Image (cartoon, rainbow, N blue to C red; front, side):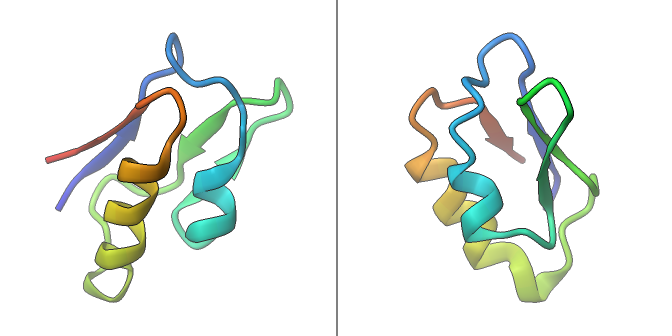
Length: 62
């Protein structure tokens, strides 16, 4: 599974970083980014939850 965060949509709420800090971080500017493109299998469920719970729907999972 691949994951990305749309910079133009991210509101910097940090929900993803709480749910899966192994994959998401907040940049200095306050917006989230994925630290990996290919999500390790053990983090897939947390990444999918972050996608669903993102207030601005900035996370894309393929």
